[in-house]
Length: 55
Image 1 (cartoon, one colour):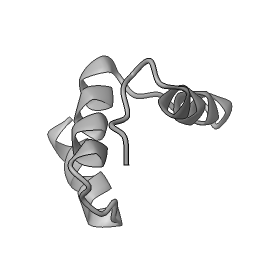
Image 2 (cartoon, helix red, strand yellow; image 1 turned 90 degrees about the horizontal axis):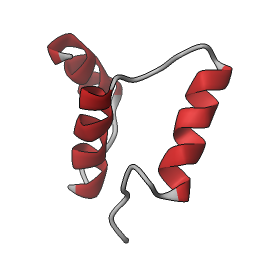
Image 3 (tube, rainbow, N blue to C red; image 1 turned 180 degrees about the vertical axis):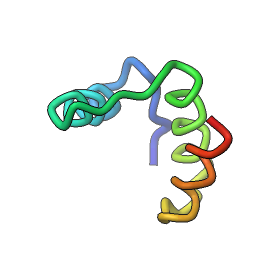
């Protein structure tokens, strides 16, 4: 799987979907999300909660 970057169409689509749900991620969280995705770690509710808690 290719690495996802902030400029990639996949990530832009995710951000657009979040915006449609009135949600957003600051730049730091965006970078953390990309790190997790590019590390091929499974995205689980606990990973998301941990990421948000550390903000």
